[in-house]
Length: 154
Image (cartoon, rainbow, N blue to C red; front, side, top):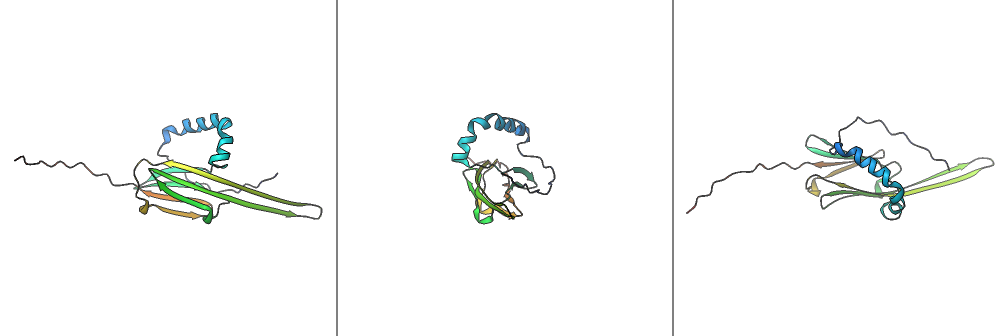
């Protein structure tokens, strides 16, 4: 089976919110892959798209590479302190030559759950999907400064 890899444009290197733990999580995923790969295929999707989470100014931005995914097959939700991304991709490649006919169908589901470091108002979240890249913008809530007010005792 042959597959074609599409090149995605190189993006600038961005610091992750959780950058001190990136190596730990990558190593953990490699260690547990043989054990949980089959479970993930059955229950959590069979494809894990690449994801970047970073802060720029007053927003946390989540970018996900989703080649082969249509906007209609994508679902983005905010639930209990998590950003949930799920969807499916389907592709079909047909080759007709004089002595050869080949039809390949690929499909896959994905599910990603990103813990948010703050509570989000779902109405303020913006999501854009273009050229196979999903960009979700989450405004960072303004921190309220503790006010001290003296109460008169009667």
